[in-house]
Length: 115
Length: 112
Image 1 (cartoon, rainbow over the protein chains, first blue to last red):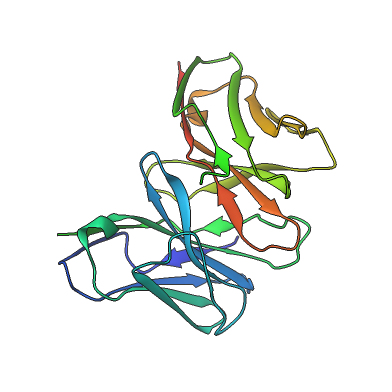
Image 2 (cartoon, rainbow over the protein chains, first blue to last red):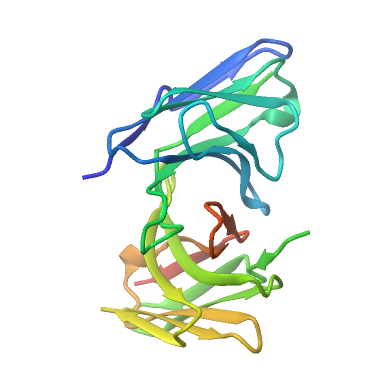
């Protein structure tokens, strides 16, 4: 079974704090993604990575950065957390160039609250 | 600009009846479409997909229909079961691109 794990299920931080969200996958997937889910807005892509040390901006990268030093691990960083970054954060991974391109496996999510 | 739209935020259906979830897209370059299902406090899980070379794909109780000329796809669940109650996301991707664009989701409630 594919497993994608996220470091925390719930997180509460203060405005201005630096926040790290960690994601690990055990399926040797090339691609990894970070999304946020907000009511009425669905899943929006923040950043994705198709290889170690490679990253590409998604639809809403502002206020975020990412790091991928190892194939299995993809980190999302909020340099200075703000209240509008309160959200559910979802990590996902997938194979590259597969017949089922686009089939992603998701972690359970991290509910981040910024006070 | 929302390229994948699910105009119904919620849907209620009686157990045993058909559930029809709809999705529209605007990007004519999309050629692969997926449906994901999400329970509360869990990540989305892949449900079913369809390539643009087909107009129908069936997997058990789930069937996805694609109408390319109308840029519309739908997910049919027959018969609906209480365990199908979840949020359903439509998603689409372009050939050669690794990323997927998701819709806003439809919350399905199947009433026993």
